[in-house]
Image: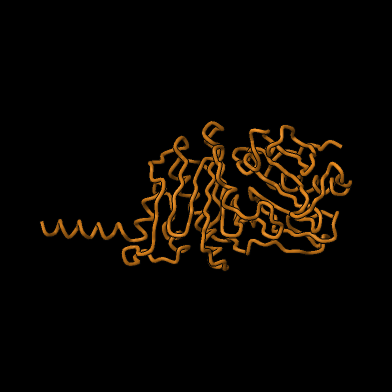
Amino acid sequence: MVILVMLSVGYGFWLQYPAAKVGKVCSGMLPVEEILDLSGKSRLSLFGSGFKSGGDSGDVTGPADLEAHCRAGNADIHIETAAEATTQYGIYTFQRIDDVLPVPLGAGWQGFTADSGASVLLNCSNWTGRDGSGILAAVSVWDFDNTADTRLDLARAVTELAKNAAEKTGCKTKFGSESGLKSPAASAETKPAGEASGTCEGLSSTAEVRETDASVAPVEECVLVGDLQMRAEYGPFSDRSTAVSNGKYGGHDTPAGIDSSTAWTSATCQGALGIGYYHASPIEGSDRRFTSDPLTKQERADLSHFAKQSAARHGCGAPAVSPS
């Protein structure tokens, strides 16, 4: 009896440790070590003092019940099917800021970091569109100490999270490598347009550009300094970039076009990538309207070139031709 009581008390103490708390939420899909690293906590911090966790702990067994949201320490985690994802943009700060851009994870991962958040999109070859096509895993961190080490911790956390979710739900997919993950700051490099070798390669309508490395990622950006901000979005990022009820092409109902603030084109992609949506808008703070100040011939050519390069990287079809 004494032994049983001691074991029970010991188990009760164990459940209060940070590692045990992380392991209980989000249906056991969280990578314990990586989440604790982000929080600066040891597995055995005394009874998890100051460490809180909670949220969805339901039993996830496949795509039909994959919609998990939980918190662990200073991390907010979302895991969803690609077709049903609704939260991926809410946790990022780069939506309309041209000096904080999404940086690809590299190492073969379809993912990126942006400021204090990171996402990975997995295509599940054995899932149909009804199953959700793939998995979107996202981690956002508050009180984030933005250093190279913590950014790498964030990249490792989101990739391990995606792997755990795929294994738990039976998603057949191809993972990136565990080594070679990149952790640069979520800021782009400004350079002369002729020296661009990443997301802005080959664009020439402005003297300077701001770019990141060019690698497969569900969001890519290029800034034509003083002029336009270009973005490529895939899968759930394309679907939810604006009100999808207004049209499946990033909120538009035609595959290519121009309105007062956006010029866009699109391409058909495979699996979880869905539709590739490529668009250009005036930079933040600009009062330019394309109805009164139309895109120049060179700006149109730059958008077309940007779209073709991104679509080719992702194995998509040729982007639609924009109306003249």
